[in-house]
Image (cartoon, rainbow over all chains, first blue to last red; front, side, top):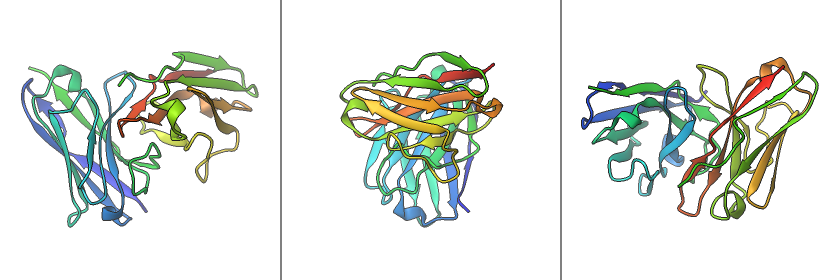
Length: 121
Length: 110
């Protein structure tokens, strides 16, 4: 059974940093691309970033480019999102998502439960 | 990358059919057959309903169907049921090798 479990969310001041983790199980983690998707309170879904199975290729949405870094440790079956220079508008539930596809795709069959990031002073 | 355009809300009575549109550009919806649709109930993670424009994942009711014409993709739900009351989002691949979601549509089953 595929499981994705996010952690690392919390309250951080504007300008601060936070690292999210997503522990994956139930599939061959290194074979598939992974994504982060976020949802601000009461708002819609926003794709944040994606990474190839090997970690060699990374992709970012315009709103986080230059501030967030996606990475993965295939030996630990874990996906990360390093978030720097955080802003109030980054406040959201952050989901990791996967479609068991080797390439970046819109097909997300599996989602974690999400972790809440609140940026506030 | 601008969000894809969806109607804010649609409604229908049980048993009826509704269609939700998702309008983009030739750089996203119109340029690729990589459009997915997600259903989200309050407090829950999104659920994949349609992928690659018109394909249904295993376990999704055949009351859900997808299509595309030009820069607009559509999700049709036939035989509306109370449990279809939820938010729906489209998602498309783009020329920048990134993804973009629509703003979301609230479906109310009357």
